Image 1 (cartoon, rainbow, N blue to C red):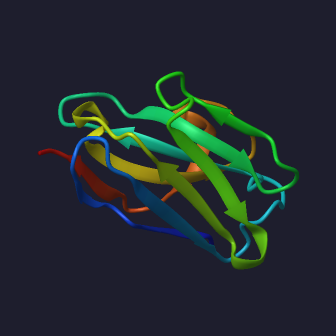
Image 2: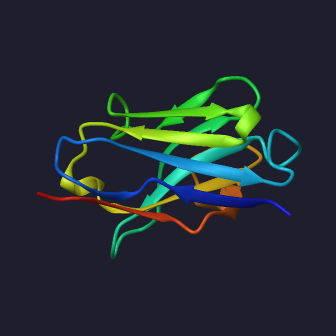
Length: 125
């Protein structure tokens, strides 16, 4: 059984940076149905939205428009870990951030079948 555990969230001032980590355990590194890892976020009262994603096999990435130029997704296959480096953070980036595992690198939450528990990111002065 695959499990995902996120870490790295916290409180940061506007303009600051955070690096989130998502560690996958079990059969979760490129096998059928497990080739894509994505980050989503959900703010209070809002729908869960795609942030960025990466494939275990190869280096293909995908970013939401608001993440381009500020966020960087990367991976360490040996550690089964995916990172989300977030720079130039804004108050509107405040949300719970989730990593998710799926078969294809797409933006819809329904494309992903395994989710972590989430990590809170708060951007405030």
